[in-house]
Length: 478
Image (cartoon, rainbow, N blue to C red; front, side, top):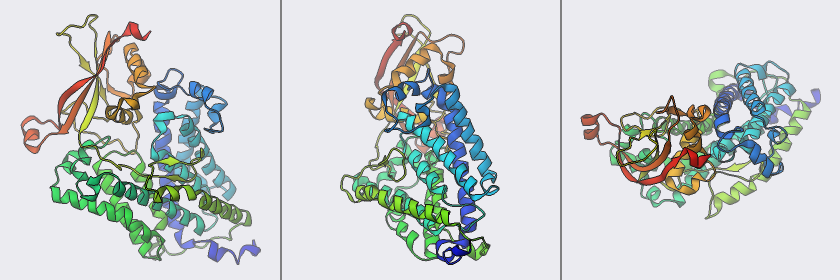
């Protein structure tokens, strides 16, 4: 230990002890939400009788392409057990378990969280294809090397976390600036609050802000994503101010929509640049073990090497959004809403118990938990919880290509009144017997005007576009 005394002052950042504590506990909370979300939705989406069964996936995709413990065993009971075990472990870490054990054991707890979630993501197929899955894995991997209360936070890992939040923000800013012209003329927010994947309870109000304020929103977004992130690498207190601005902008996004845990996790990572020492002082720690310092240096070299691909992607005129360059999701590229849809379309699923379809057939609508359906229902707040089926339904309305593999099985499960699938929905209009037919209609949705809302109480107005899927009979699906 004495041999490390010379090393500790420049390797460690004792003034960031409170930063690490808050960051780790908040990250454990995000892990908890992610594992609970996985456990509650697994059987319907990925189980043996799910829409995209894991068993089928692992038979055709090799382990080297998608490393996961579920290549060895993928029964519903085992996967569910792992998801609930991850939730329990995350809850324990949130309660302080990682600080109550020696450093090596603490690292093992964080590594196990990462391994369990990596295993879910790598067999999750389209249900786990979102950028925040990779972001959680990359953050969780770095958290393994943040240490615990036995030692001071390592400077190198704090810098790696700053590098991560820089890539999240700057990558998102670049893809907007290079993408849809409405970002450059500051008009994207005329549409975005209405057409985003899953509006929240305040989205209607955000949409009806004055047009000049929407332009201010778009301009502020460019500043926050293309300028402010460079401040993360400047001396204190500039880095703390930059992190504070990023946190405020993320909270604005939390209020205006439902983006799973993306915004909350970005806030967590931004905390790595916040210096709490003026308020919390500088606690004392023991010397850093040599083996831990070697590991941290090795991880830093690894991340620096793997960062070549995200950097090349960011500077490229053909920048891609939300891509992982390795199956371990260690260093990824991020970005969102390079293009903004001007018109919102929604797929509405309906069923009927009539054996013969006529012009007088009565169709009853299935309601989803998060995505718009009933025009009189105010959008709910679900984030940071992730409603995976609702999100995929938004993509499906953009193009039938997004329905490949899972939409027909979804209809088949509705024709069976499959209880696991129905638990993903808000309402089942056929609680006693399954429907005889199910169809899908495509509607154009828009927020009501203030006058329309006062007159009707509705939050949405919808117009039928076309039939998305003609009526499907139960016999056809057998």
